[in-house]
Image 1 (cartoon, rainbow, N blue to C red):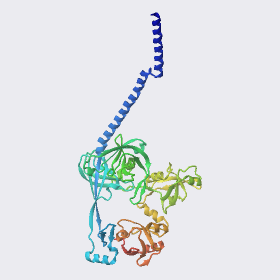
Image 2 (cartoon, rainbow, N blue to C red):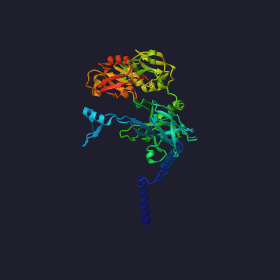
Image 3 (tube, one colour):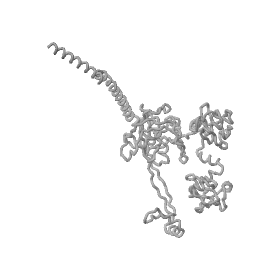
Image 4 (cartoon, rainbow, N blue to C red):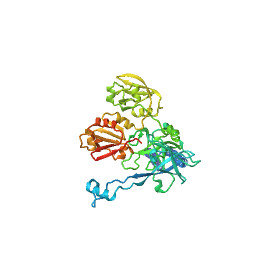
Length: 510
């Protein structure tokens, strides 16, 4: 018995030792520690849920406050079309249309039989958004939403429909103020867009497709600030300048234009203006005008005053590494002057081609965008100090900021050799290999029309871009010199012959 007890004791001790070794090998002892460690992720999840809850509450709050100040804007524009003497018939088997008017017998037949076609009217509809910035009915929106509108209807978030009146608009900034006859309206607060940071959460509010959906309540989409100070360049035909925009991935769709981009405090930090898309729909790249750009001009828009922008009168370009090395500069910070326009503020101040602008009014100028922002916001008539590098030497010039011309394209075109702008709304160039290829010109002499101002005598006469003017008042126009000499001498109506035929350009004198 004693020997059996000893044997079982040894076996028991051996089993315990083996169990201990196995437990250590399998890491069974730190169970309590593992459980403690599992509590930390749970707390983190709870904290994350709390943050998500706060985020959700913030968005709900923005939708319920700033969202009430967002409106839908519907516009109507009456377009009048004067019937002409050209008659079109569809080919029976497709392939477009056949302009029988090009053939003289057909043209005469239809002219004699039908006579002059009457003027027709049709309505062009538009849709956008806006945000109420004053309880007395002042609404901020995009200029392109209401431009040339004959009728504006504003639908409030509560469903009321009111007639809107344009108080002021500015094409360059693409901003406008309209007014509705109402009081004690919900108002959105304009925030400080200069404090925005990349990655910050924002909410885009508007009414895309609102009238189609038959619902006046605005749509809310959420995203972040993707980038700041984005540039889409200029839209010369529309006179718009998109050089300092906020980029966001908050969904912006057709009808969102003019609506606000709002931070989580409910402050308007931008006005939605455009999207970048290969399909025409939302692809995660939207743009908004900074609220501070709007703040600067709102009071003048409400008063219906013209918005003035500063101007130097130079054509400029960014520096490259090679250009910086050529001009002996330590880096490519600065702006190179490519051309100084005649009688411009820059010319009067002594600026010259190949000067590199480094500072304006003690503000560093690192690129073209910064120069445009500084000069554009400068007070017209104010004298500022400009620091330039000329032949590796630093100079300080005093420049009086001028007023930016309304038609800057034509001012620049008039300064270019080989181009003439302004006579009765037409801009022409001497024929060269570039424009000959662009417009498919076969004529070897004459001048080609490169731009026509809408509503001008040239436009009313029926002239078109790409027309080649061959004669004026039965005198041959061989080149730009002939054209300039003749336009200076012509006082009354002018009979112009082009490759398409004769056109009577009437005098602008009333």
